[in-house]
Length: 200
Length: 60
Image (cartoon, rainbow over all chains, first blue to last red):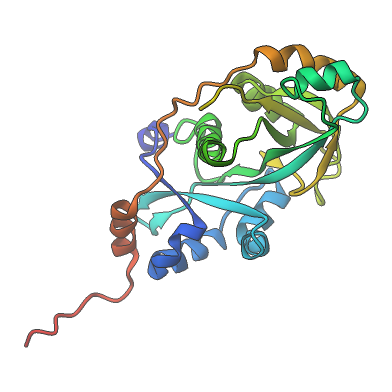
C-alpha cells in the first residue's frame, strides 16, 4: 500500500440533484459513475452505474456522490450513498410497546428514513475513506431532512458483516434477517434500525 | 455495503418491538459530525476542474 493509499481523502459531498446547475460537472460525475466498480456487491455497482437515475427522476430517493480531485480523472467518485423513505409496521407489537416505540403515541405505522445504498469504490481503501465517514455523511443528510420534517427511525438493510462492523458501532440495532437484493442471493442480509431522539 | 427497498414496509415482529422498546426510550444520536457538503463555491471549483473545453477570451 502506497503512502497516498493510507492518507484520508479530502473530499466534497453533493447530491446529484444539486449538480444540475453545473452541467459540465454533472456530465463528468455521470461518466465516473458509469465506471464505478464495487465487486463486493453487483447490486450496488449496477445502482451506481445508472440504476439511481429512475429513483432520482421520480423523487423516490436522493443519491449523493463523494468527489475527490484526481490526477487521472480530474474529479473522481470514490463513494456514493442514497437516502429515501420507508415505513415501519408495528401492528405485531403490543400496545404498550408501540407507545414506548412511538414516544407515547400508540400508532401501528410510521415513516422512517432509509439508507438505501451506500458503497465505496473498489479503487479506494478504508484508510482513505472509512465506511464510517460515508455513513456519517448519509446521516448528515438525514439529520438535515429531519430538522425540517421530523422523523424518528432510520432503517438499513446490509450484509450481516457490514451490520456488525459499520452500523452497530454507530448505534444501529439488528432487527431481523431480510431478503438479499437481486444478484446477491447467497449473501446473508439483515435489517438494522436506529432511533433518533431529541429536538434537533 | 447497504441495499434496501425504497418505499418498502418493514414489519417489526413482536420480539423486535420488545427489543426496540427499551432502547427507544433512551436512544440518542450525536449529530455533531462536520459534513463536507459542497457549497456553490466548491461546486464551481470542481466544475472548472472538469471543463473539457478551455475558455477562450473574446478579447482580440
